[in-house]
Length: 450
Image (tube, rainbow, N blue to C red; front, side, top):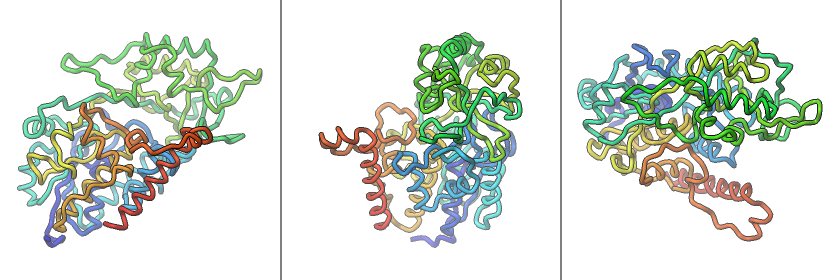
């Protein structure tokens, strides 16, 4: 076992995974060189120079302990997650979801990382991790380059690690100025919470006629076209709203525009569809359009989104866009601790490993840092039980035949025996509760054995 004070780890990328990994290692007495390029030049998806920027939305999804996302957060917190701790400190109302004030969240992540005595932040565009490892006299490297890997580093990965397709496309939802909305046409209510009055989500209901006219405009609206060398490959759980419209007139109504748990109008008629808005900050001065990622041109976004009831004079703080995401074929290229098969001292963390989502990316940063610490302590990699959320995520990316980024969901965890009587009385809800209970028990047992 090596002396922890003599170990140095190079972390490339200060996104959610890189930030999580850096702080975990530093808290455990390991020196970290954290390299980040966004302070030199922002990529097309980034808006500010702070670390751990939340690009697409401000929600880290459900806190419900009986949900897959809630399980993942619980496990991360038990392992000392830096990201979850800061997120809870800067949470904004969002029903049972963990949503944050983006600016305050990223600012604090940045401040704590820069002020930690064992973390040295280097503003640099990484191109060759092996050379950087030598230059900074590091023992290990963690590549956690987030949604957009820079061209130089991507070229290195393609040459040294992978010859596979190394990307898909994601889209960003627009954010609207709250003062420019007509609140008389909207109301607060949570779609999935049984609350008689109020709620954390602002709802704009649509009639059947309004909805189909809106969908037609989305489908026909002018889109930003991909470059000649590009091929749109979207993550199925984060499709642009305009692509949903192209797939069929009712696709959005069974997705982000689903009219569930809302209110009838003054004539007692229930909404045919709904647009939901979520607070961007505690002041409620800005809202993002839930599920409204888009490829529409800026001009078309303003025109079409002003068709939403209450948006007639809306002013947008920033509009939606598409950006390229990079990920590896983990099963083919990585070991169970997410180290490279070809270069065992180089690890990959976050979305680049084949997970999708803020919490999922951060959890892989935590997982990799945990494994690096074990290696430093002279121990073998530790396989997390597949019955747990973190274990299920790693198992998924390490076994899926055709790489496809995934969020955490109960479909990744092993099924559970379910009696005929239980099916009758509890259905899917009870089944999820039983899977969640098993996951909690298995993780507690696993953690106590570490």
